[in-house]
Image (tube, rainbow over all chains, first blue to last red; front, side, top):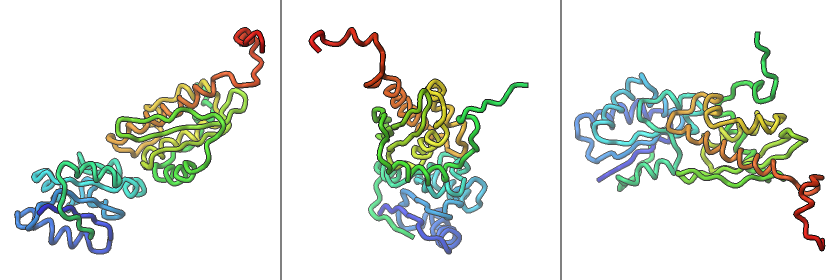
Length: 112
Length: 148
């Protein structure tokens, strides 16, 4: 099964659900689903900024597995980080996300 | 020492993409002004169209309609905020590269929106340069039908 994650809420999502559940499972190839993409809203985008330690691991896994990482463009502009993301990580809105996923469509989109 | 240019295009403060988008989103919902250019479209399907009012040979006011893309709206708003008061010849010289330079913080893969915004502006400026009805250009009298 192919899934895409949308990190829409803040609180404990990146530091806990992503960093302590999803990411270690992906690194060990035991997540149980093919993650084809992740999209980040609001403060969750800070994980995509160059130098972020969780982001470094996530970016490495994404490159290995061909997984899309994308930040919400308005969220990134508002935080003035749009040009500070890991190399090759785009920003965009829904049309960009759908277009980027169209070549590798997920079976499920999971909002966290 | 070289004197600082005091044209409006050179005296505006640096603005952020987010601030420009917020104001541009509201401006893009306003009705077009009297002189409207052709809608311009890029290879991704984004559309932009400028309209303007003139005061002599200067731009009095600018508005635009654009696809709901934050980057494109920010570039269009940058034009709309900085060019009023400028002469048409100065406005014509504005390029997409100028917009990219004036607005830092846009990642490289989104900077092509600047060219679209500039093209939409130039289209409106072409229309603004056309003779308007009521102009007293006597050379055009020869084109009138003799029976008129």
